[in-house]
Image 1 (cartoon, protein in one colour):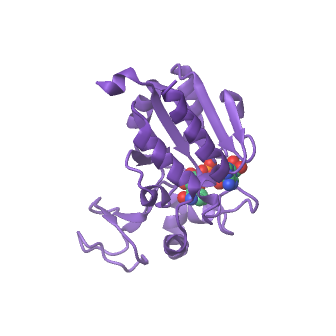
Image 2 (cartoon, protein in one colour):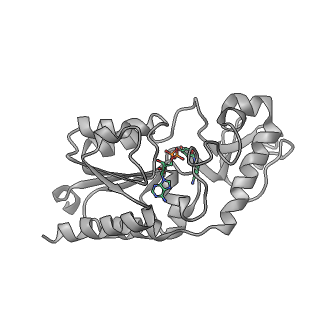
Length: 240
Ligand code: NAD
């Protein structure tokens, strides 16, 4: 019951949230994802054309998770999740696992996860912490060549669209952290929030994103500085 009396809060995070943990962003300074063009590693066509290259790319990203840890912004978002009395949802575009390692529970990975694979044959989804090769048999159905990273590639439909839409329809506060606003449909969520009557729409970014006009506030600066400050303000506002 208490949740109905308190405003709903939706967070959308992007690669900028994990940047200070040492996970490179996508379109940041280098304009490429770790030196690769997205057409070569992050589309279903790339996987059909060059599955070995795509597996190598995600094997390296998965292995790199072992050498990074959550930062002060991930930690602050968990404090917010635990202290927010109303409906709370953190939607992340990130495929790393830093939010859950910080303790996040009310979290949806709309673009999939590096530490999961799925089988195109039997459709099982499995936790996966080692390398994946074309020759790796699916542990469920035994077929080879059918396992793929559980990542939503360009041209594919993001996960949890219904849950995300429902949460935005009742949210009073929407916070977008470290997202360039060029990858759709994620970039369109601020518009959906605005059209659904969400009055407070806050952007946290080093520089205003492509969709900045749709936000009502900009907190400009690094996530590890801006997010903890914003979280303290949001929690303090509750007791006023
Ligand atoms: P993006 O890489 O396109 O943009 C990153 C944004 O973060 C930019 O607007 C930049 O100004 C901002 N930023 C960079 N450093 C920041 C900091 N320290 N503090 C605050 N903001 C900062 O990111 P996107 O919009 O999330 O789109 C990239 C897509 O690629 C995502 O869909 C995601 O699936 C994938 N990706 C994921 C990861 C990850 O899991 N960590 C990393 C790279 C790419």
